[in-house]
Amino acid sequence: MCASTLRSWGRYPNAPQSSEPLAWRDSIRARLADASTRVGTTLAFGNGRSYGDSCLAATDHVLPMRGLARFIGADWTNGVVRAEAGVTLGEVLALSLPRGWMLPVTPGTQFATLGGAVANDVHGKNHHVRGTFGCHVLRLSLLRSDRAPLECAPDEETALFRATIGGLGLTGVIEWVELQLMPVQSSHIAVSRLRYANLDEFLALSRGRDATNEYGVAWVDCLARGAALGRGVYTCGNHANDGDFSLPARRVRSVPFVMPVSPVNAFTVRLFNQLYYRRQRPGIELARMDPASFFYPLDSIRNWNRIYGRRGFQQHQCVIPEANARDALRVMLRTISASANGSFLAVLKRCGALASPGLISFPMRGVSLALDFPQEERRNTALFARLDAIVAEAGGRLYPAKDAHMSGEHFRTAYPAWQELERLRDPALMSRFWKRTTQT
Image (cartoon, rainbow, N blue to C red; front, side):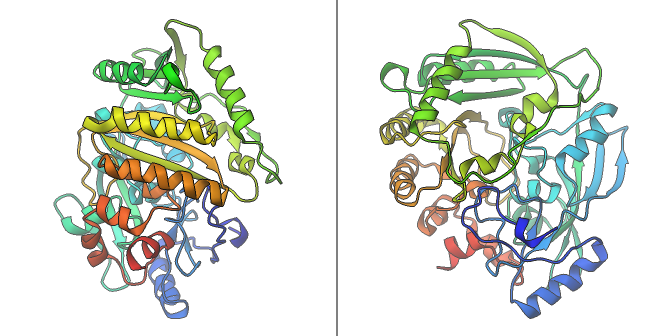
């Protein structure tokens, strides 16, 4: 892995990470000790799919984990798999789904690693049913600079287990993960899709359909105003009870280079949003989708982050408690629309009440809104300050895995257990995010 490729997915902040190849588990501790001696602190780096600076080392020196991509064992009778931290979710699916086992939780990319999924306690379209990724981790191996290797589980080294789930890679280097998979009857998803007129319709739809659907998510037109505020297209679905377990090959396109200037602007976003909304005809559209198309639509465009240009992009993702969600989201959407700083990729989804075992896991019962913005320092700083204030007043919080701007005050208020994580942090590990939000 070339040092020049080691960046966060958002390419902001522009902080290339230096590294040397890592291929064997038994060399992790020596490399951890060496980095501690030479540069002070380091950080495990998965596949670079975190958007902000949580995956970037404070010293810009990382341990690249993608070379540790071996399966250690699998029990296909009970759906339990153990694999090294550098194995991607897509690689797990390629092995498990033909045998009738699905990832119980998956984010919007199959290219995240197991270690990264644990460190960020990722969630997906079915949080209201399955909770976060950490809810399904049975055991993990943790390598620290200050003690012997140890295994953590819900009932073994419990404090470190809870701190590692969603712990942003700061409690030690995750060596391997043992995961409980979910049985399914086929690889296909039976999908219902319909457009809705405004935010109130989304809230009613998701509240009603969550009870009978494993998955639910909405694309939202973030530039709509007035009576159409929050309009969008809602998609829900369940695993089909019939069909095979095939994984159809997908045509993958690629963005061949970083755009000199981002084509994402108020005009193109408004045009795209109009066309996308109108493309969805009135009424309910039924379909069957393969897992890649349903869960990972953006993965069909390799290096899609290059579309945002040399400056990169930031994502603003928050979750608002259920009681305050409607009012806060209305104000947020009005603020975004008035700024004309819109996003093609605007997503609304409902989070459920199932608590994560992690100390500082992001989801809470409520509604999550996520939007991508081309990096424009003055415009984003002003807009994010207004959005952050709305989130804080509503008792919500931002997602560390997607963040590159959150203030230390906001983070420490929204995640009061941060002090416990700091107490359990490996002294040889420090990220730019953690230094920014807790040390300055």
